[in-house]
Length: 212
Image 1 (tube, rainbow, N blue to C red):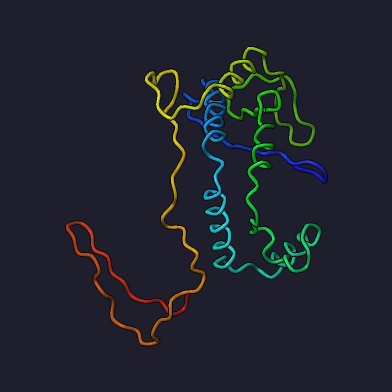
Image 2: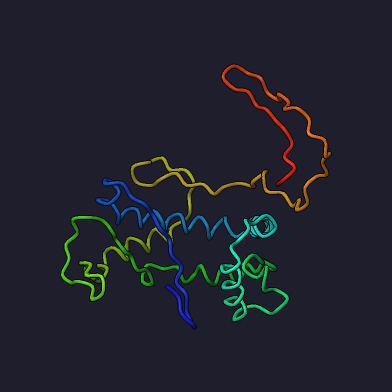
């Protein structure tokens, strides 16, 4: 959900039937993981890695239908200068640790809205347009307190009591993210496929593609 002067940060979690019965604990685990992000996840290399992924996505994006491209550019005119209309959605230009920390500080239980979407929910209202049954209720204070404790306790990646705390760890550097935006030159001659790997249960063949 967003508007002219606000935006909502959304996290979607797909649950099993067991997860639906324990959604309150899953929210607690989310805030515990968030404490780990705050402690160890705000790094310049993570920002630059994401920036490189977006830059690669811009240079190697799929071809859009002309109407879709025009509609997107018209929308971008409201947000970017003319020089950035094409690439504005893919640009990350400056790592600002203080700004990231200030935004993460807003991720608190009392600002959280939880949407539980599954069958056999108790409802007391029906949507006007789609006639969808739903219910709205305030989050109990005991849950807000429990989630706040998860957010403020020291972040740990390993726990001796796995029934109480999950084992969380932030991902390391991705060795497959590269800053090569131009393909290597190839010969116009099409050579026969070459067998690169020949192992039991696995064979890898390669032939250069000239049209992509």
